[in-house]
Image (cartoon, rainbow, N blue to C red; front, side):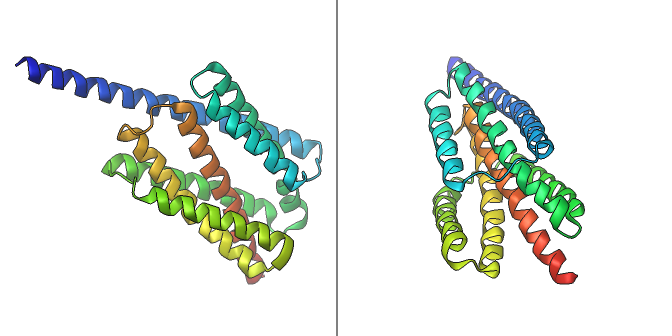
Length: 225
């Protein structure tokens, strides 16, 4: 009986811990997304110029390593806001470009936002409903994101092929959807107990999905026209 009670208490504790991580993750995610949107609006209002890609990568990597090192302290929360605010600010020039120079740019932006929301709720909802363990996806997703990152740099500076850019966007869309499945599964099955890292992972996936949808929808809209 005592052993049964101990197992039951352990199960209840695990469920409470999982629910707490889920609650904190989605609350923090909502706040960081809102702050990121505000900073994007500030960047658009200032008509900010696009940042140097190498400077942007250096700042991003520095902040990511800093968040990893401070994940269990209040500084981790502060740095996550700094990171998401920075990412939102860098998004402003791209959104201004779509609004002023891309046909049906406003429609494309709204469609990309809606598509990103649908993918997020669909992927996270599926993971929560099925409670399936998606750990087996991690190796594939890690290799995929590395390959697409390298190919995107090569295409930006060497190949400059629109069809390759579209293919990379489609690959990133699938890979980051997979990361949402993986991260949600990690939270549900106890593999992730730090809501700061969980929020950061999901935020990056949503950011990449939104950018990918912008490029994909723009390509298909221009082809139709």
